[in-house]
Amino acid sequence: MIGIYFKKIKKIKKMRKLSFVIMASISLSSCMINTHVVGDGGKGVESARQKTVYILGNRVSEVDSKALADGAENYEIDTRANFVDMLISTFTFGIVGTRTVIIKK
Image 1 (cartoon, rainbow, N blue to C red):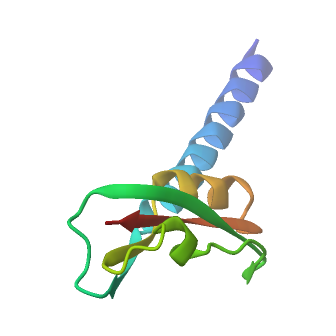
Image 2: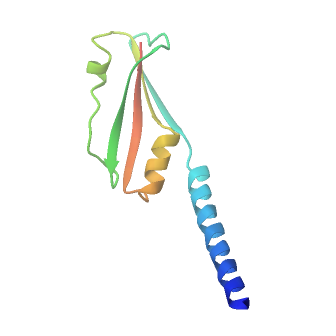
C-alpha cells in the first residue's frame, strides 16, 4: 500500500517538472517583430501572410515579399515569431522554427 503511494508521488513530481519545463520554455520565448517599410509604407491592412521555415537555424523556405505585395509600391513587411511559431519550436526542441511574414498595403 505504501509502495503505491510513493509511485504516485513520483509520477506527480515528474509531471510537475515537465509542466515547469514546458511553461518556462513558452514564457521565456518572446515575440519578435521586424518591420520593413517599402515606399511610404502600408495603410495597416493585412493583405498576405506566409510562413518561412528554419531547420537548425538555416532557412529552408523563401518568402517573396514583392510577389505577395502584388506589385504595390507602398507596403510594409512584418516578420514575426508569434505564439504558434514558438509552440512549433518548443515541441521540436528548437530543431524546426518558423516565422510569419505579413504584408500590409
